Image (tube, rainbow, N blue to C red):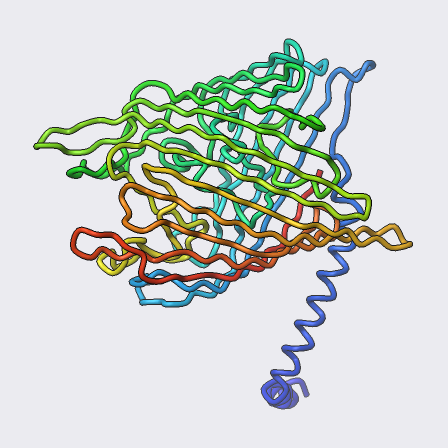
Length: 451
């Protein structure tokens, strides 16, 4: 009987395949929405517990994940699985994190965090969790605390230590983290730091050992390139002045928005130095160049009585990484390789984000909160981002812009984002490197956090 009915079942599925697909999609969406509604209730609760009669020991856990769906116009010459691809549609896990922490007597704190980035259909994915943070901190006084281990307490600017789960734009500002995954590991380094608050002044100072970079290329004539091993320590600092409410400094990471729940205005300045970070050729001799960066920035979030808020950020950064230094970066690049002779950008979604020269970075956002009688609090936030850079190696300005909207189902614990980003495409014409085209991508993101 079962054998007789099997061909009929196959024929029914073949004829009604499209309808079955639509029903399955609707059913899956319904299940996801039900799960999200339950997640919204429990995800924001702190996962922590205290031990002992005086609760001297407290341990806790936090975590999060960001999932991307993307339609990407790739740089000319891009290959995906060894086939030329002018457009890539992909799904990926942009990042996930799992953080554990412990506290003793409110002075000693231990932080251990695991995670990884960029899981997608790429055949060379590395799915093993990476130890991101592992450090101990002791607070002597509100004005002075110090820590030791693998950490992200770096200086230069606000977004040199960005909060990846509360950004204002879709992703982090790569221009403010020039060494990412070259002489550091996901922004983290092994070293020591000091931080504190003195009245309305907030400061941090970091010294760390640069990571070895085994993929460093041979030095080039008149053009700075990375060295395999930087000499000595990397030093960075960041100082900011809080005019209105003071921001907490328990975490090294600065948020891009408080969703209108804090009234914040501050101005900051920072410096970064790493000895013999790049190299170049001159007359057959190899010259080594120190990396120096300075930054000035300003951040503001202004809530209003009508359940709205304005957020703004502006930063000026000057990098000096040796003559003609330039670095192409593409976040979550889905391509496998490229024909480098086609465009100067390289493969995928890369653009010249870091270089020797000057850069100006701007963000602005408008937030509107929609409440109802059941106590649910949905929030909509529209934003724009513009990054304009004048790099020594390029003959045209690098102008990258982004616009999008975040829909917060429950703050940063449950968030949907729809974003479009546009970048310039550069070509080498004789001795000139000029922008002659532009490409972009759309990204739909869902973010989930716990703790």
